[in-house]
Amino acid sequence: MRMELRVCKHCLDGEHENEHKQAVTRDLVACARVVREHRDELDLDDVHVRMVSEDEGDDGRPAALPAVGATIQNEQVVISDTQLVTMGENGYMLVYPSPRDALKVLAGNIDELSKVVGEEITPDLSEEGAEILSGYAGPAEGEESPAGGDSPGPAGPTDGI
Image 1 (cartoon, rainbow, N blue to C red):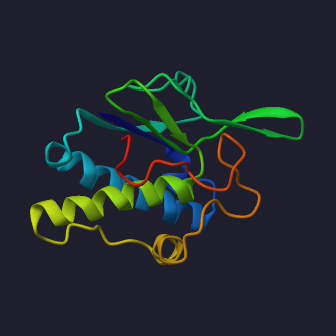
Image 2: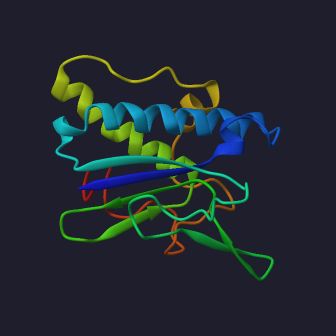
C-alpha cells in the first residue's frame, strides 16, 4: 500500500499569512512523517510527502501516485493544494482533498501504529489540528468529498490504505 501527502510549501512556511492553514498543514506533515517513519509496522510500501510550490519549475505533479483532487469553484476547476492520496494493494486510489479528512486519516494510522509499537507516537499537534480531530464529523461546511458526500467514504483510517 502507498500514500502521498501533497501540501502547499507556501502554506507550510506561512507565506500566505493564514495561521490556521499553516498550523493544519504543519500537523499534516508531522503526522505523515510519523507514518513514514513507522511504515513497516503498517505494511505500507511508500509514504511520500510532496511540497508543492507556485515557483517556476514546479508543475505540481504528484511524486508517487498519479491522482489529483480538484473542486469546482466559480465555474472553474481548482486543484486542491493540500491532499492525501492513498493506493491499496488492489490498485484503488482514494483522494482526500479536504485537509480535515487527510488529518483524520493520518491520525487514524498513527493511532494504529501506537497500538502496534506499544507507545504513544502522536506528534504534538497545533490547537487547530487537535480541535479538528476532537470534533471531527466529516468535511467542514462548504467542503465536499470527491463523490459529493459528507464523509471520506467507506474506508476507515487504515482500511484500503
